[in-house]
View 1 (cartoon, rainbow, N blue to C red):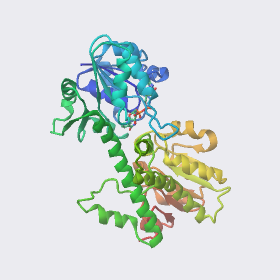
View 2 (view 1 turned 90 degrees about the horizontal axis):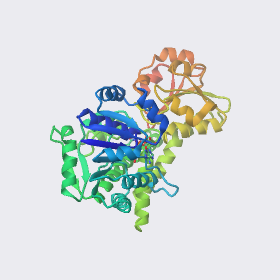
View 3 (view 1 turned 180 degrees about the vertical axis):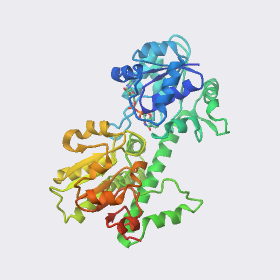
View 4 (view 1 turned 180 degrees about the horizontal axis):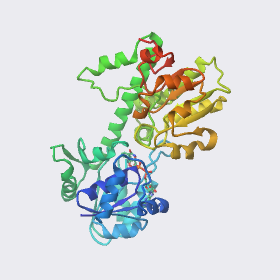
Length: 436
Ligand code: NAD
């Protein structure tokens, strides 16, 4: 199949590359000239494990190419994926300007039947809006289907190639059939392709992200309670995670969720609810709890230093919003670092992949190094903010020797409180301060 993927970001690039890998001919189009030049020069604009190699192979075999000529990409394709951003608007709603701009471009360049696929995360009713926009520009035949994406940055290739399920919102059975054919290579282990109406497909994506975010905020509140009542969060987590009804995933406490999806998607659902005269009380609380959680580690730091961190130097390990990505969008590290800088502290940070992205957000207001031990040199405390594997087993004796004071604020509960304390550190976790 000849496919155009419009929007070559974290999602578009993975989707395009994976469909090329199964033998389709893919053109990835983007309005960002720098991104396309980089890809055409053999580079890759994001960090995603395994992606670079897969892109290289599919480009070499001429199944994958990149262009800024969106109009031509539309003309040449039968199936067109819309994978542009849907950032948060001022009122919390999803900003559809990029999706609808692409819909206009598609309408203006129709030269026969096209199947248009909404891959971006969009509010209920968007497939109909996209269809209306295209229809206002052409009398050619087309279908619009909703096909939300569930990949996670850091494991995006595996998630896309081996999905738990594929959700397709299609009114037209022929359109649904084309989608089935396209996804058949990825569901060989009998994972379901769920065909439903576009509205249900659109809401499925938001419901899934909102429920995951709810679990995170819930566990973060349990952790805060653990610190206050002297319970151990790790023990409580284990105790409830072994209940088959609850399961073990998404039970971790930390410094709050971030990234390009949960924050905006939860707010978008709450806004959709308000637009329909419905107060989605749980989601409003999920947002509030997450905001509060981002300050929780800073509160611990301030308390440890008697409310004054002016002149203190902190080592930050981990900047990206989660491991195995360079994505810094809404990363909790930004809130924490900004709060400590505002209180007069200095910071040297390290991250295996996100330093360049972090510089775009923080500039030269902090120091950077790609060596974790160097970041710790002369530090009054270490703040662990992203649980990259690289940070899990440091040489604690060397670490202690390099730091001015052996204090660890573990924002991801990576270390065993008992073991770290045995080695002479003062340790704070999230819900693990009881030391049990
Ligand atoms: P992104 O910001 O990384 O990429 C979007 C790309 O679209 C950019 O490269 C931008 O230049 C391009 N673009 C904007 N307007 C365009 C236009 N008119 N024509 C062509 N290109 C245009 O975004 P992303 O993280 O890939 O997310 C895309 C969508 O997928 C969002 O709706 C997001 O919510 C959803 N999603 C993201 C993830 C994730 O993990 N990042 C997972 C599932 C779903």
